[in-house]
Amino acid sequence: MTLALIASGPASADVLLIDGIQSAPVIQTPRNGLSMAQVRQQFGEPAQEVPAVGEPPISRWEYTGYTVYFENDLVLHSVIQHASNN
Image (tube, rainbow, N blue to C red; front, side, top):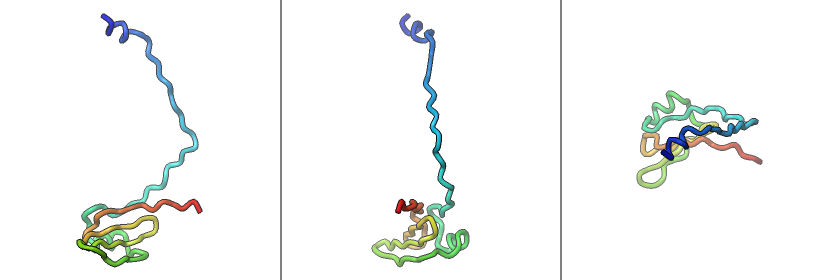
């Protein structure tokens, strides 16, 4: 009986509007598992290639706006670079 009284009462909700938020531009980055050759073919030459270190060998290619990390010859992760406030 109590449930019926609660469910039949009036319902209200607040609406939150947020102004002034701008979405960041979408940056396409290489997906995990692509080979170095596929990344070069699809995204072009990197601005900088940082040699592999460690075991397994992890290297990175730096592009404008993002960095691609490789384990051996395959994309491990792509990271979008945040704009500096300075």
